[in-house]
Length: 133
Image (cartoon, rainbow, N blue to C red; front, side, top):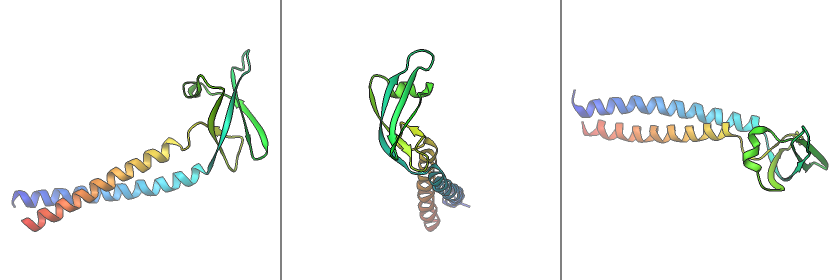
């Protein structure tokens, strides 16, 4: 068994593992996007309520005004402005976030693309090494 045969065998195993893993991540990405729902853009107004309430966020969605407190992890993203671009969920307009998409589907999509690209490269290497041997 020559070195090209070993390269072909190893790259074929890597190709199978990464293509299956990439396909599963792609499927999980699709389900995560569906579960996340549709988020519509809006403008959120930051209001300093004073006292113990801290900063509150108000926005207009689906014909109504909504309000909630600003979460501690959201302070770095909204500091220094009175209005902030935000996104509310279409089916539940009382939910608001300051990013267009959730990090979970973004992570799954990126991981799926990386694994699928590695799988395609490993398939090409396996085919070329197998033909050369």
